[in-house]
Amino acid sequence: MEKGSKDVEKGGNKSFTKSIISTVKNIKIGYGMDIYQMSTPPSLIAPYSSLTYISDSFAKNFEILLKANYIENDLERLLEIFKYITTIFIINNNASGKPIVPIVGETQRFNFSNKDEDGNQFNDSFHCAEHVQNSPYPLSISSTINKKEGIELVYNYAAKILFMGTYFRINIDEAETLIKFEKYNETYNITLPALYTRIFRGFSEYAGKLKIEPTKSNYYIDANIQSKPLIGGKFHYYEAFVCKKDTNEKVYKIYGQWDKEQHILNFQNYETDFFFKRPQHFYEKQLPAEILPTDSSLVWKGLINAHNCGNNKLKLKEKNKVDDDQKNIENQRKKENLDFKPVHFIKNKETDKWELKK
Image (tube, rainbow, N blue to C red; front, side, top):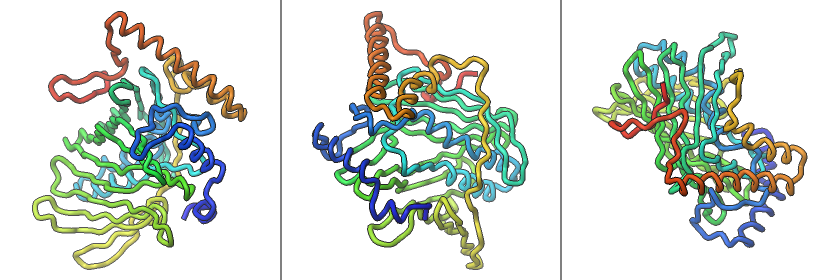
């Protein structure tokens, strides 16, 4: 259980819960309504864009994927990739609100390096993300890549935050998550679980299906991340099965809490061993010499500063200022009959997939 989880479960974040209830009453949110782009009281706006959240999630333990590139055995490599996927989940139960919806054209670009717990350095990685549309649904595209090793993680998603009465559910629609290994000519298609914010219980959790399916290998992983029961149970507990594609035979069972120790059961001899524990991350960004004006840190600088000063009135003013500028730009495009063209990504006409510009 996370530090402080018992207190959170027992009492929740009372001020946050009161703000949510007040918001629901005032703007009459209906069951199943998508509130992702809905106006939000400043106290419920997190001081970061969803692009920042994505960037940190995928980059912080990227060294695990780089190590997987040296595993020749396809089953062992699949297990290493699964370890990496269990590290991308980030939950901050002290965060007071939902991430900011990025503006069209907002970007994140940086080189980064990782270091494992043994002190080995992993350099030459690069992350790029761009928000390419807000209508008919918000769509962000990202690529985390190490050209030297021939590894790329592609994550494209359209988010919806659905109000479900006693919780919010962040659905990732139109999602595409791929990990490509050039060395093995292998692509891993990944299904990720949804994120739930339990309003009256004061915590957030991932729950639902997690699947990793390679295009070539005969093995795949099918996992279920379980919701924390109202009484008892564990936070972030999952059970996963490693199976053969051709026969659906179960080879391994992996289980545990993704933020704590996890174990693996071998169905051949029914022996259980330690599998993985999320390592500390030693992740360092190297920002470009010239930061683009579309970078999240500059787009939302005024809002972030207002949040850090605890000034909600100024925070809302800064949010409205960015939103108004964005509306003016969109109206101008409509007048001139122009479509927005992403700066860093292009859609492959043959595959209909978004790709990082070379």
